[in-house]
Amino acid sequence: MSDPQPRSVTRSHAGPLDLPVAPRNHGMPLELDWIREVRINRSAVERRAATLRTRRTVKKEWQAAWLLRAMTLMDLTSLSGDDTPGRVRRLCAKARRPVRTELLNEMGAGQLPIKVAAVCVYHTFVGTALEALQGSGIPVAAVSTGFPAGLSPFEQRIAEIRASVKDGAEEIDVVITRSHVLTENWPALYDEVRLMREACGDAHIKTILATGELGTLRNVARAALVCMMAGADFVKTSTGKESVNATLPVGLVMARAIREYWERTGQLIGLKAAGGIRTAREALDWLALVKDELGDAWLRPHLFRFGASALLTDIERQLEHFVTGRYSAAHRHPTA
Image (cartoon, rainbow, N blue to C red; front, top):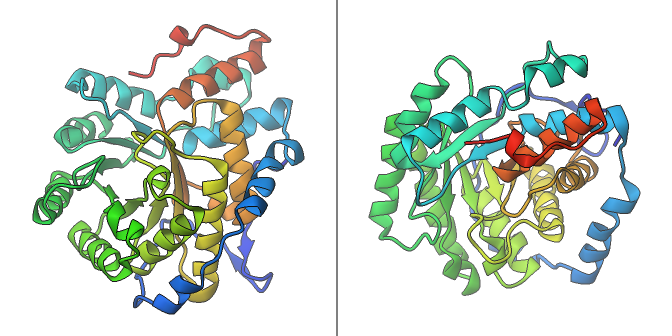
């Protein structure tokens, strides 16, 4: 994990694949035999995830380069009950310039277009975020479908998606009905996500699995595959509101489901790690996982995201340490 420049990923080393724009997943018919065949060796997954910190380390300028890359992969997020238009505007200002100009100049990176991948807010603030981000090229993502529980009436959830798209959201983060997974009602989950994707229209859809509530890693893998079959452009770990959110074993299982889907269908699906990722060290672990399991081309905003708020503060502190040799206080790097 020493090269900060992405190279093309190959399918079974047969040919290059390096897309400059976000692909759309057209989905496929539900294949229940594929879902039933899924098996996960939990102990092997946990051993593999545990090796990431020991096998992959980056230092000094390489670490700084990877942390700048991590900034460009963030869905900078504010999903609190006390959000206000002012807070969202401050969040958007941070999205435009996530790291101070003087730090970038000291690093020799002042010419780089460093900005976050998207700003993620509740539907109420889509218009506010669009206005604040005008001209930046940063899309607005809206959480939808009764976030975070996803238990509001289905017609209401579909209406919420359409409302956010109408207001200008380019990405929609939806939550699935967890009971469909826990009861293994795969046709119901497939139909639900398919209808949500149709409601999104041209907006990209990220399906939130809420992995901490699915019980087993096998359920995580099967839920991810069903969502991809139904047309999800991204599969996302968590809402950030569960007691257990994004973990490396879950990320490994989801990454391998994405790889298997790609190898079978030729369609690329993004991965979003959200919830509980707060430190630069954790971000580097996730980048190592994605690089190892999916390849360098996935380390771009159209195929990998962090759902983050506090993470940005720690990355800025690490970059300031790289430049000055000192750690600054967190309040020197406010987000919103």
